[in-house]
Image (cartoon, rainbow, N blue to C red; front, top):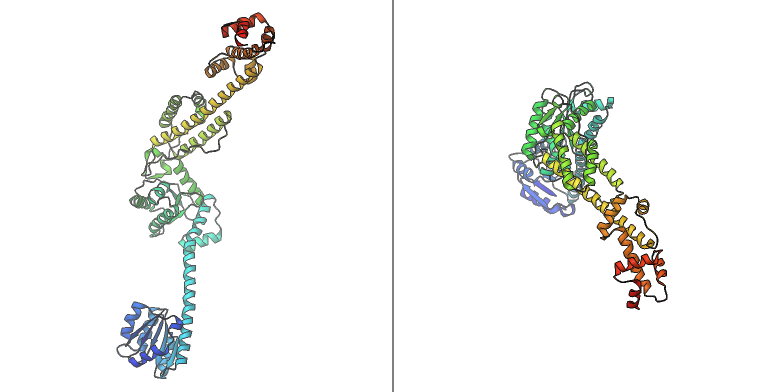
Length: 522
């Protein structure tokens, strides 16, 4: 805390320096001035909290100084120290809000009691000013959030109350219920990522201030953040005269600031905010991305049909079932060609593609009985660094999604087929003693005979019949090592009802008759 002593008599200044309990009140800087003129320079530079001043001084006297202090609206506490018990001096001290008036010669008790009261009052008022400043800051921060919420709610559903209409009129000076309105939507995701390093709140704060500075010059409208959407900036115009000019200006400023091209979707007029918003939203969703316009109006959006992936589901299904990446790419290329030639590539079209691809993928996963815990790749990076749409990137991203799906389904198909063949092999191991027919296996495992024959030979290198025979021969060799078993008993034990036929098969596979094998191994 700082104080200043203003008196043309040096011994008075020295007396105050010695008598006042400065340390007790946290006053660590004490300035001195011989007259009002010098005092004004020091006060302006150092802004002391406590001011002691004489009334009779050369150049500028105490009354002139009090007038200047009062006009300057300083928060200092001024204590008049005078050798004259003069009514005119006291009247001026009171009129110009002096804290107190003490007479010379100065009594230490009176001086310190006055100083103590002045410091306490200054601290109390400083705390009050700090609280008021904080309240003012909070109010200023809360006000944009309040209007964001109000205008966002009007975009969703028109529910203007009389109180709301009055608040808008008090704040913006317009009758929002009666005025014709238009809305422009600005997506800011590319701006957030490129110029604000992902800081969405800072991006909104900056862009809203830029827009509202332009809009506020002639009270043409207001810019706000749509609290129902993550990255949507909304401009509500209630003066239609300068709309296109203002949007051009805003577009130019945003581009100069971020080097990002962003579309501005301008809807049609309406007295209802929600109708104006829906019109702008339709323009935003349906505008042709490949044309890369700056400002798109509702008059420029042409009706067109959407490409539906579901219409191509059968062709895609068979391409995916083939397990061939090339077949899937070929099928996708046909779809992309149709998309470019017969449909408008819009945000609405992109959303339809993404929704239907997810639906198809879920159906195929269910068909293959796949339960996957980790998320699939989601290809949504369709945009160039400058914010423009890239059809090439869109194709690449969709290709990546299909590649991952093919890999997942092919792996599941392989595991399922492998598991089926393993189960059939286990069945053969357990039932080799019985007559086994291919149709019986097909019925048991719900697979075609042709598929089983081809797949089993591919995995085990033998037909079903040959594989069963090899199992029987392995078992027969072990049984023949037991000298107490008859040959016919061994034959019946491995599934042959005829001893001679068994001996013939055994010799063909082992290279010797059962008796010769026994003699060689016992």
